[in-house]
Length: 612
Image (cartoon, rainbow, N blue to C red; front, side, top):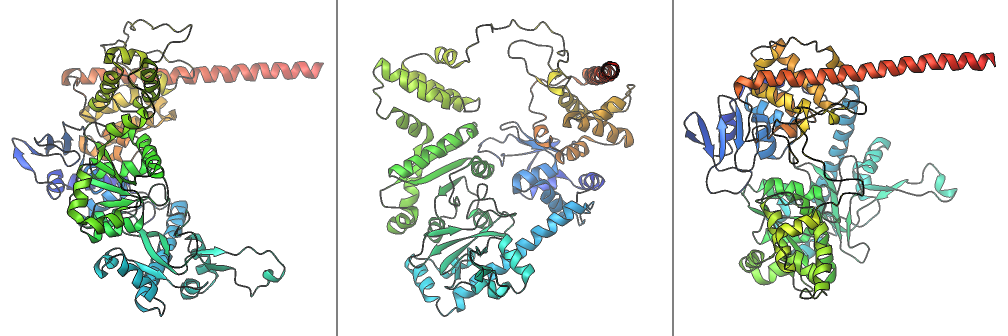
């Protein structure tokens, strides 16, 4: 459905929902005083640190920092975007989600809906051909030879594109509009018209992209067909052919088999990332349903981020040859910035000439899973790869290893894992971790000496054009490691903790109406929301924030250990707000003065030129 969801509906939906009921349907909660607890569903733990607070309609994990309201929990747990989470919660409460229609949004949604429809029609066409086409035997024999059962073929909606140039085109491309949709969906190819003979109106303009191939539909998180992969049955090239990029298919973000994995209903603690469709199919056939494949592309940060939302561990399965190890190293480089504490990555290198498909059928499920358990941890592969061809016992070799490893270790997030990787490098080099950290610190330039700790004040004065980044909140305990954040974001956090502080404001907020950055605009919206509805609670404000570009930054609102005492909260909020307003006024005054000067001198110069 097109259009934006009205904020008033979101507020009403949250007020009708009980976060305890929402979470208890997905995670078993236990009463603990006023609150409820459970083991966190977003990271592995043995002792419960996940808390649900009915009074504030808020959840928070003291282990990993995940937190938010009912909509945020559905987004994180069900792995859906904000609109889908609202629809889920509304459906549970017997409500229909209204939309504020936008002509552009409606048009775009309508176009996408038509592409999804033609893709699904193609999916049914290919499945039917696998059952009924007179030349289907080649496809059936191939699947039987690979050990694929009818149940697995059904679960993964396997199909067959028969030989010929226009089977699909004839079946569902009845007029120009439908043929244009087939082209937009990547199912047909437009001919290049090289000669005048080809320019005749009667000459066919399109032909089927997939011909005489086993068809693997690629489905998104909602189960909609978004593209296809085809495995050739003859001698044509390429062996595997994927749909091109389309308005609904972006191969750098999608994973084959992810929908089927989640649909199985099993809870997995790890995902296997393999290279081909048949690897996923063969593993599923043997009972291993937690495997997904990239779509002819290298493993991207988008792929890894999606998987880490579901599980804490990823095992890459690659061939043991040079090409496989090269692909594994590229995957390692991409995963380093995502290696937060609690996550694990390992690499399973298969014997030469084997892939997961052939190996699992040869040794069986249990032996294959045993190899997965013994897969090489990221840290071992990291140091083994970098140490190849280097004498790490020599001074020169240690220096070379250091130069190779330090830039990569810098990509790791701050945490225990990153520190342990640094410690291991220091141990290998025979130096202390402290000295290695000093070597890794950026060197100041010739005129850049380390500045002394800033004295106080609470805020830095605005510089340049007075943008939000120049006006940064800084706690009273300042120093080299002082925590900094945009002043507007700190004000929003205080307002979320106690919405009532917006009711007694004496400041003129009109300067905020001229703000262009998202933080200040959101701050004004939240203040207005509370002033218009004094009974507005924290979880209602959080619901509003979830629908903005800053929503994800506010989900860890309670993670800070140093929380402003309630008695000082209003004073601090007013001080921050005064600073922001003053900054905006000064910026406007500078711009006005500049405009006046330009106008005055411009007129003077014009008169001077005229007189000359």
